[in-house]
Image 1 (spheres, helix red, strand yellow):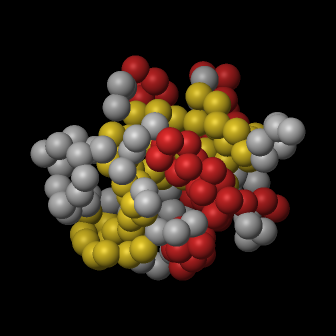
Image 2 (cartoon, helix red, strand yellow; image 1 turned 90 degrees about the horizontal axis):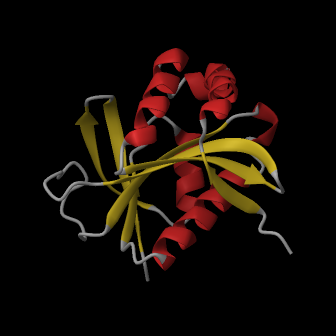
Length: 162
């Protein structure tokens, strides 16, 4: 049986789809200017510390997820284990939001990185993004701080490998 969620690397062919998703009101509210975001995703193709994925549900693309290694001298997420990754994600089609895919895809991804010996996964949603925060809590994340970042206020959340 195929896995319900699969993660394949983003390619240049995916960029128009990602830009369409970034223009959707439920995504644009929390992400930057779509053209700038897509340019940043494309620029990260050659960045060894960043991995960008199209998330598929039963073989159909529906979300974007990026994972990045946090440099040892980066304390934006506070004291943390050496093997920590940060993630950011969004669900593109509005009809896929609010029906359980967010927590489920995040859980599937977290299990993959924990199997690769990662000790902690962190993320930093805007404190007003109650929908995302609830999804992250359902996926086992807990808030540990609130900070001001270069992108504005952020609720720092983490999940540790058991």
